[in-house]
Length: 360
Image (tube, rainbow, N blue to C red; front, top):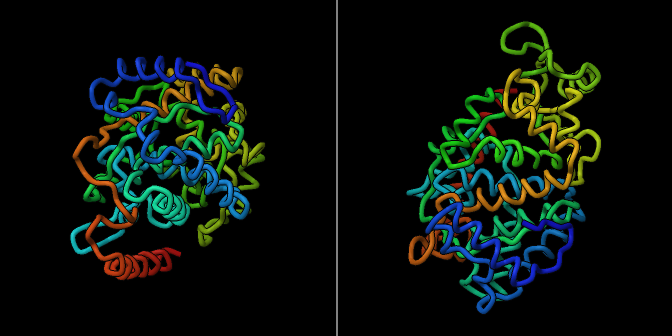
């Protein structure tokens, strides 16, 4: 599969070849997705998504990492159906309030801006789940990473699965075996795991996602021994013991806003920020070590693998045909009062804020 840094549209031959490969890998459900799904009904959909993200990047350089995380966290729960975007309502417990997402998942306002722009151009056509897929590709390519042909035609789910979000999403505190099992459960293999972890080459992380490594790792009374001592000292200043946990730092120390393979070279010098990152290289005997090494030495290889894994992840149990709906507002199912959902979400946000304050 050809992967380039260019933002130009792939020619018909590449699209045809890619569809054949993806169809053979993922079977009937993914064959219902295709690269030209909106060519007649919303031909400028990709450009609208990209332009909106470009505008957002001017004031928020970390938005690319945030948007790709939304796609990842959506697809791992109920498949790629936009369920993560739904607010609380009388019948829906939002995935936004699940432990892996509460007070950390962000970028919903940019998704809403993208959806508004798409609705203005082609009302009722582009799904919220496809918005997340398109936004991920645009975010990566705008940061200097690969481009890929995004397969489209997903429809939006009618409900959320907060319990599934709590149980199915990989945690930064989990060991490699558990994370591997969660990837396997949605049809992703070890190479996918390492390649998709490479998305941590841009974006930021809150202290709460890595402070378990800084002072009392696994109850030892000492820091994580696989954490570079210089990085440890820096992180302890950003995230002091018994502090608020509100500090933020770069996931990639060297090129925090660029999409490149420095994430993997960081792991080789014990400069991975999250426990789940560093274990890819420091878990003795793991098959992930060889993959990290190959990606660290060959950025083109990483880019190709990342693009393939993103396409594969984007094909986790999509709703197609007449299943689900095309949401008019990504926060609510069609026919539900947006005002009602906002009122319930505000109440839920207040509870989350009270819990966060209590934890400080």
